[in-house]
Amino acid sequence: MIRMGIDASTVCTGYCIFEDKDLKTYGKISLNADIQWRDRIIDMVKQLKELIQLHNVEQICVEVPIKTIKNVITLERLFTLQGAIIGVTATMGVEVVPVEVSQWRKQLHLMKGIKPQDKKEERKILKQRSIELANQLYNLDLVYKSPDSKFNDDDISDAILICHSVINRH
Image 1 (cartoon, rainbow, N blue to C red):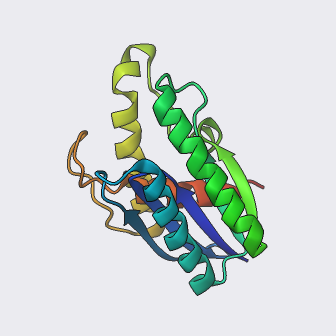
Image 2: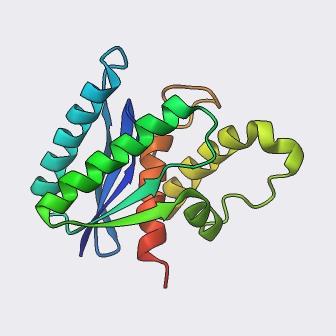
Image 3: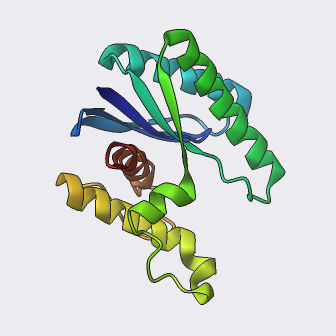
């Protein structure tokens, strides 16, 4: 089975392609943040559609936006993007597997050892752990520069680990 993992956002979406359990390719789709967000979603979905067709993707594993996000604007944009992804994949006959953030992180033990007092830094800790785990599992060289660096490859590592978690559920 050919699967695509997606860590979707309206500015930079990480993706990967697996054939069975083999990671075949990965990357990210980055869009200009100055473009209106709805237009970015349209561009994002067009590029995802091209990747799906190019790799004959049969199943997409996509992270479900965290419903507890307090920023309503961010939540609206992420759910709009997810709806657009589901819509385009439905027209292509591609199965969508929604993956809860807490589910894949727990399955891969990324939350282990994070204490309540670390809550402020949790997101930064998880970015680094995600990159390190994807590098370890698949012998990659994804980049982690610093907690707040825009050059970190956590969008890609999250996509890989989302798909990895689905493949290795059983």
